Image 1 (tube, each protein chain N blue to C red):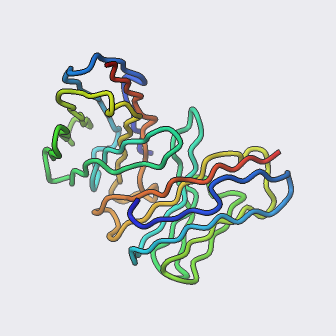
Image 2: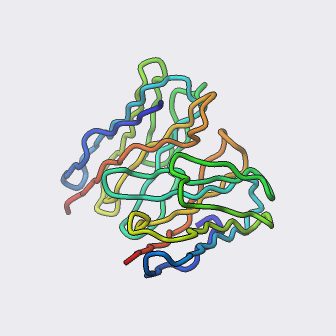
Length: 113
Length: 113
């Protein structure tokens, strides 16, 4: 059964800092990996989707990498801003599985002005 | 929010009563999903649909049923609500299974007393 782990569970940084969020998964046979952002009381917003054949995706100040063989992904946020404060979740879809999207429990990020 | 509307946004109900949550999309996407989000468990799939009248169970389907009579609507029914079903319920849609990002609604907060 696919398991997705995100470390750390919470992270607090000063504004302007570059930071990395980590995601690991146990079964490397995935279709894709997605990073989401969730603001309090809101649904999830898709940030980046990396197909299994890709190594990274970029959107603005965000860069997500995927190392499928080691079961790891990182989300790099450059020049963090207070508006980046949210919970970030990663999720994977496993090949041949009926689990559909399996989510990690998220990293709660606080960017302090 | 990618044209997804969940209703109601909040509901309080008593144990043993039936409850129906509605997800409506304007994107004409084929795939629709119901998730629940609970502290300590993250997001877990309840049921999903891959077309009109085509549905399947997810990880935590016991106590829930779904129906999809039109492309745009996906209903989640709790036949007899229990306190363990107190949760935040999210609907999600995607255009192409396994290869497209998921887009989420803003959620329904359900409290069963």
